[in-house]
View: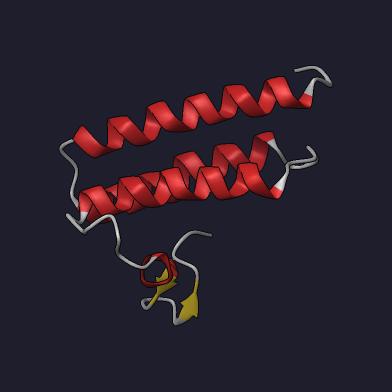
Length: 98
């Protein structure tokens, strides 16, 4: 890893896109998909970019890709509100993703 942040962000965006596309066709239940996203994908992003300056536009793009995979697994319409997916009712707090 070097200090070329735009290059690193592009690589992570590409990796996240490929992982989210794989999750869409993976034969896991929706709950298993959420667990995979929480434990593997979000954790890798948090670990890789702990101190990296990441623009808000890139974070929104990543969030959109993750939510698209969740919508696909739950067979929701594309126009489904993202606030609905971010609410974690089991933990009684806002934010399905940690």
